[in-house]
Length: 141
Image (cartoon, rainbow, N blue to C red; front, side, top):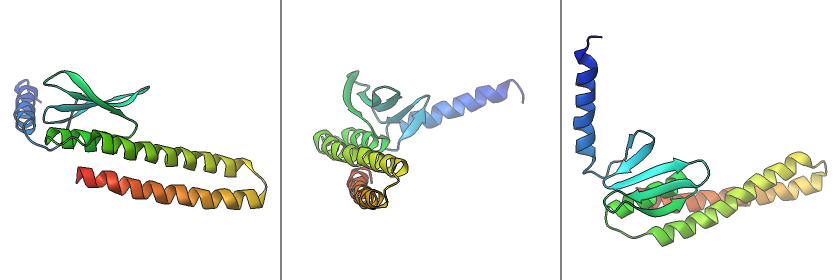
């Protein structure tokens, strides 16, 4: 590789990223995801943080990447769906935590009746999670 090749690659990347800054197509830049003037960053302790780069203010904080993308995409389009998406996420988080609890309880128990009950509850939690995930996907696509 010659000395000019990295420079050309960087210039090409800058041209492509400049074109993406004005579109609704999400793209990764560093450790963040950008959609127009909205940035999503992951924090290990706080979850996904969504910022408006024009006002340099935080828009929302989510636990799941899909809800962060739903909020960011709609915010970039000028739609305010934050409250609705966060309510869906809250319910999704409940069912997600239930599923983790039921799986753990099933692994630790030796009582077949207890395991059967937890398995039914796990199936319900998974079904509700899938249903809620479809609702969030409707905001994205």
